Image 1 (tube, one colour):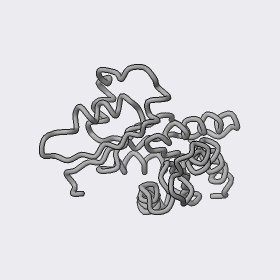
Image 2: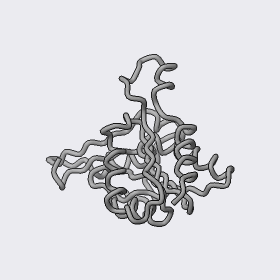
Image 3: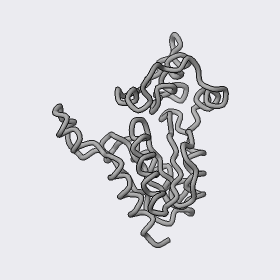
Length: 195
């Protein structure tokens, strides 16, 4: 994939719709990865248009700060964005303030926003539904380790699926994919480490 191509991962219906409307042009391949679960949390019809600020951020391939805070940066991509928000709410109840960032695009990756979040919080948890090893979460962790090393007070925590093929049976799938509890445990591990 060259620098002019984009790979988009939508966590919300509105983002997926905008990506599909604005980023698919003749002669310019653009993979848009939208999991079927993104239809569940919002429900209802897909919005006709995004508001102006969100449209500009999406068009510029900017990450979205879903929730601002001070204790840890929580980076959740695609459908894991919902698990990260749930984990952040639970962490807040436990007195841990977490900033949630949804990268939205993997190519180009909005490294500036991700690194700024880590510089602010000094800790990072990267969550996604893919297998933890060799997934795009590993790439995000590598970017943070390289560009924000001096600001990190703890190793970057990674949350992902267990290293196994995705099962067909719903009960087994629930076992393999990460959930809000897995993300919450990673948050607790990173904030408990001394800087």
